[in-house]
Length: 203
Image: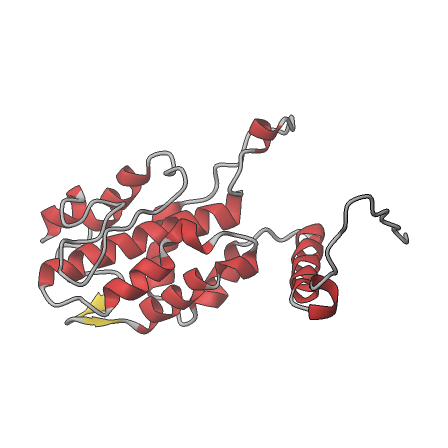
């Protein structure tokens, strides 16, 4: 078991096991640099112990993480990038030890991507034309997911790795406000625009 987890052979990182009730699914988006190496380092030191489950049962931290991944939109991230729906579906189908081993590694992969994106950003600013200093290297993904797996509160643990900047909090508040506006029927159910119509904007 330890060798399978460390090598990633229990499940491929981007695909669940071949059990009858689980459809293949991918973690969309670009894999992190040294993602496999980070996961291998975590599981190679754990012998037969899993991070998110024990004796065929998801831990409280695992359940909380799964809920958090499915609500990652509240952090301005895309939940589809972390396979939350597929993980939730797979959880209902786990029967064998190999299933739980693979599920545990898959959940760790999602946690690693989520925490890295949350702390360091999902997009490299330089790729968007912003000349910023070299990224900080103080974030340890392996230690982070191990800490989250035993934290009294995964949400509180995640809050500790978020950027602690005033303008980051302002952006989060603005995101919540605009999402509420997007759900307001009077603002979203607009009449169709006919040919030759003139739009008047009030600023």
